[in-house]
Figure 1 (cartoon, rainbow, N blue to C red):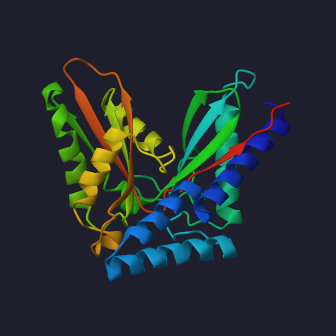
Figure 2: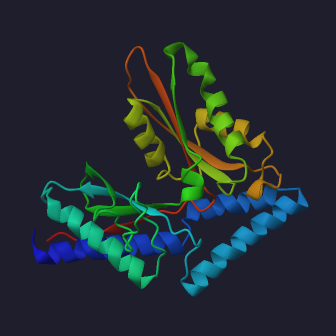
Length: 275
C-alpha cells in the first residue's frame, strides 16, 4: 500500500473515533430532545435535561461524552481501486492508537482471559473491523461501551415463533433494567445464522434513528410500555428507537439478536481520499 494512503486511512480512523466519542450524531440528539419534550414525569425530564447538558458540555470542551469511550468497532466501505490487504487493517489500528492518545481515550480493550490491557484500544494489535464494497472509501467508528453491550442477547427461536420476537426484545430490555443507561437504542438482527444475526444487530445501530418503519415502531412502543425510563428512574422513554435488519435463514431456524446501546448512540464517518 502507498504510504500516503496508509497515513490517510490512519488519520480518517483517528478522526472518526475522536468525533464519535465527543459529538452525538444529530439524529440521536434530536431523539433525546423529543423525549424531553414528551416527558411529563419530573424526575425523568430532569434526567433527560442532565443528558442534554452533558452533550453540550462534551461538545464545547472537546471531552468524551462518557468515561467509557468504548471498544472501537470499525466499518469500512472499500472501493474496487483500493487493495484489500493487511496494510488496511494495520492503518486502522494505527488510527485507533492515535485517537487513544490525542483525545485522550480510556484504554478499554483487554485480553479476554488474562485481562491484560493493550493500553491502546487495539487488543492484540487489531480492532474489530468489518469491510464491505462501496463506491467511496469511508471509515465509520462505532464505539461500544460495556454497560450496554453486556446486556445484549441472542436467541435461536423456532420458525413457528415469529410472533415471539417482540416478547424476546422486551424481555431483553426488562432484564437489563437501568444497567445500559437508558433511554437505549436497540439494534435487532433477525435471521441469517447465529453469528450473522449478531452482526446485523450491531450494524443496525449505524442506521439513523429519526425514522422507524411500522415493525420497528411496534417493537419500540412495546419497550416503552415497560416504564423503565431514563436511567431506570421511570418515565415514558425507555428506548429512543429500535432498528431492525433482516437476512434469509435456514428453513428450520430463526435467530434473533438484540444489541443494546446506551443513550449515547455514538458513531462517526470519515472519508478517505483516494488518488
